[in-house]
Amino acid sequence: MFIARTREMGKVRDFLDSKDSAMLIYGRRRVGKTRLIKEALSSLDSPVIFYQCSSESYEINLAGFTDELQTSLSLSFLSFRSFYDAFSFLVSQRRKIIVVIDEYGEFKKSYGPAASDSMLQKIIDSLKGTEVKIIVSGSAVAMMRELLEEQNPLFDRFGCVINLQEFDYYDASLFFPSLSSREKVAYYSIFGGSPNMLEAIDASLSLEENIERLLLSPDGRGRSFIERSLLQEYGKIGPALSLFQTIGNGKRTYTEIKDRLDPHNTGNLSKQLDKFIGNEVVKKVSPINHKDEKKRTFYTLSENLMRFYFTYVHPNRSQIEVVGEEAVFRTRVLPSLDTFISYRFEEIVRSYFSRMARKGMLPGIMDIGTYWYDDRFSRQNGEFDCVLEYADGYDVYEVKYLRRAMSKAEIDEEASKIRAIRDFKPRHIGFVSIDGFDSQSRGFDLRSGDDIFSEELGD
Image (cartoon, rainbow, N blue to C red; front, side, top):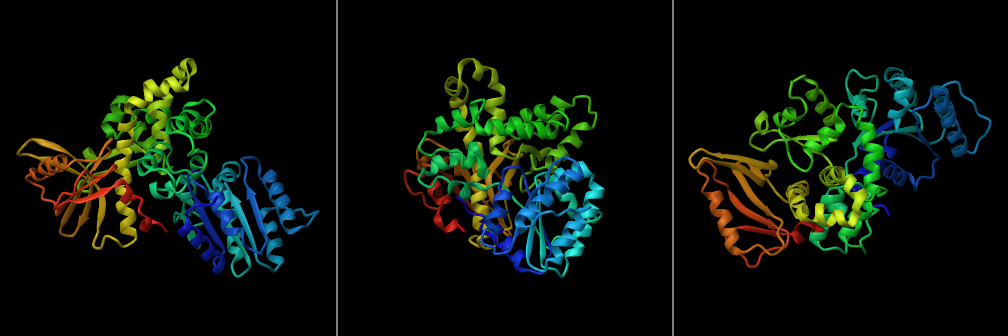
């Protein structure tokens, strides 16, 4: 089942119809790069050579590519001295042929960055004006981004570039359309937006059962992916486990992380954080009104699945082994699960408004984020969950993940607190409540969980 990716699919097909010779698609593991490419190429009449690189030698990769070439073109007994010779042969066929080089980062590791990039540059240049096209794909995000830098031999060689991300909350919900808005929010908050993970969810089971079998179980798909893939890959970058645990489900300032992991201020932490940010595992977030202020800049894990793992699974591995998944869920997960989801719901609401903005439904919108206030009169400070910035001010939305409808009394109380801040006067005040409201309240924009999954937001 292929879901969403309408915009990305269009970009791949536009590339195939263009005069460009090369395209780059990169993104974290399991975001669906290979699936997107295969789906976009599935209706082509032209031959497609799909080769997944390995971290083995140049010669082994060349032999593997040659085998794929022979199979795709129904040929035999071919032999090439180099990849360049293999592509020269393809050009000599004088017909449209699509070549996919998947996991190019693995080849770079074995052959060397400079040699592999120079080789690929020579190949791409040789394809100009021919009917052979190449799609290069990779999961090593930072390494793939380097191909786009001016000093790299491949700079300006790709006619189309896609940085493929996980599904947002809306597209993720398309995997389980029959669930309620509350359930859709919960599943996305816990399992994230990886297509591979979403396909593993059994909507006929309860949330608890899916968490136990996919995340708490030692052989669960989500847990296995993190422990046997991500942690092995990123464990080479300093104290990855300690950093991920420190950040967990929250937001941490650089000082908070440094005090725990680098109290002697060796300078290594900054480099490690930069590497994780470059690989899109960690992200920096700042309030909309303090983007350049270090004290208000926070670090957070990029994926909901990793947040859940480092909040509930990794700290309780021994307990899971002793008492089992069900007992750990009941005693260690369930008591704070709504709080965990409520943090993610705030991000979902910001994503909801962002989706509206991209569809032109918020004319005049300039930015979306959180807002840090510091009221020197009342000596109170804090952060608004979601603000929309316009040229003449901000619209403020408070986000509520309650187990019931939000009452009019609660709306009035929250609004009074916002209005009491002397140095901040919003244009409008609104509320987003997952289970809606028990009555209408004039003067406020009220949105429910059903609103954020409205069909008009779809592609």
